[in-house]
Image (tube, rainbow, N blue to C red):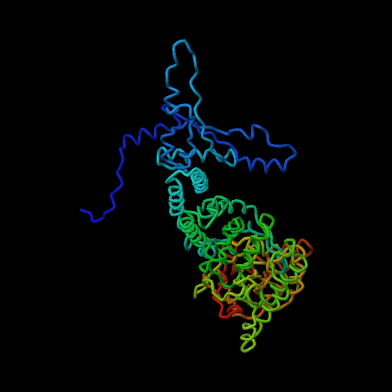
Length: 608
């Protein structure tokens, strides 16, 4: 025998429950009608912005439903309160309707009493009906998280008992049924997405070592397809419906909904993984740019959203702003910017990028050019702190901006998860024979040419690899007639400025020192041996300038028959033949293959 003194709820008569559920929308025993009407306040507000007042049709009912008062009365206290029948008879309406007319009369049945339910738009009616159907059946019909939220909203407005809880449970189950994505982001950002050889049909090689730019760029036509895959994530669907969330912390189901948001946030972080995975993977990159603002906020405020440096997180936010600035308001943009842990950015960012953003904000604070809301005086403190050491750094920290001066997160020293493992993250490089021939084949004697290697799977035409908030290019250089070629890495201007703000960034950064991430580049020879070309360990480079070795790649001799070709056409043919012969030791299936490995940096952010 159970020791629980609380009596168990009676199971109910299943036959009776079945018969009640079958009455939904049926005329049998119906004794009232639910009429859905538009919210007059919403209609008036809509009419005030138009040239003509709302029509009578707009104010009339937008749908109706046969109902049974004895079901609604016990399913909803709100409905019970509304059921004030006409005082002329104590009989139930249904009984009055079924009464036989007196002899000699042809009186029509009395019209059914109406229960009015207010909805904001006609599109809300199906969800309101679904909530009422739950009152009859105890079953929730919601195909998506959005529908469950809409039904929850209507059920809450009508006070239908048990339906709100059922909607929240449905949302929880849909979140739990989402495919596991933990770890996928890291794999997609490196080996997984970058596997395979890149053929000559890929992005065109560059003939010079310059390119890129400080402005937030667009992307290839596949961006739409990549972003559309985001709709498969239930967590994202939840973040797209903030207007359907409980609107007050004292709402009865607010605590339960907070738990759902925490689960959605966990799934979102697991899907995207870390800033490097997003910036270096085309699919994740365009999915991130398609995120609703609240979804991005969930990533930025999470300690589990990894990165190599907070500079990469700021670069990620800039990429999102490039796509979403015009579709968000100033308050939401401020909230997102306030989540950057600015003091943990690299010395490069705090010395060059942040001051440029401050100048752009000072000059263009009401446009996208001034998107990051930091004042020059505030940026100056971060610059000083980044470049100080010892006692000076301690003194600056003691005199840091106090509450109200800058957002708390800007000064936060709580680290995010370090996303680079001890052995590093490997990305695949490739360059096709056609790309080499297009540049090197047309060179005159002693003329230098440059070809950019592609980083497989990265966005923006696979032109660069992001690390520490900076795009890096791997370049092959060759002087026509020489038996060697060089391999270089070049830091590009980060894409964090827009419009008029680009000039500030270019002025402050051009030719300035750039702290290079710890990385190593390896090329594959045809004989299967890998050769580590060079390794960089937090050395200084310069923006817009290459760093590497001019004679690292030993080429085969130029064929004698190619040297004998004369004239302009002969020169072109000679160059193409020379490329084919000289690069034979590196070309496999028409491509040069290699890797670039990003290693965890020994130099930490300014907060260290």
